[in-house]
Image (tube, rainbow, N blue to C red):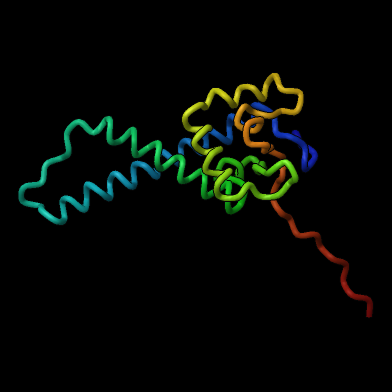
Length: 155
């Protein structure tokens, strides 16, 4: 088992896997929102219901919005999405704190619109993506928060 020191920058493989997991979660959320919208149309008018045609453009736009919202909320509140939680990494500001809502939203937009910026991690000495460089953020190994057992009290 490979372990990484907490607080060290995450590498390209870890970050790609986290991004892949987050993309799957965002796609599932997009499907759920789309399914709920179609179901609502059916409930309102079941007699004349027809499956919506030519949804490609609407679904693509919805997928972008859902992915940006998902990443923004994850990074602004806990510093990670599901992918980061699974792989034990967290997005932090240069000082080690949370990014905040505005920087999380900007980072999410950059990551969704320019995902190839992540590949800069492979050549960066500090393991930072283009998005990290622009927004002064970092992705660090954080790991799960495991409580430390205490010794029983002496009698």
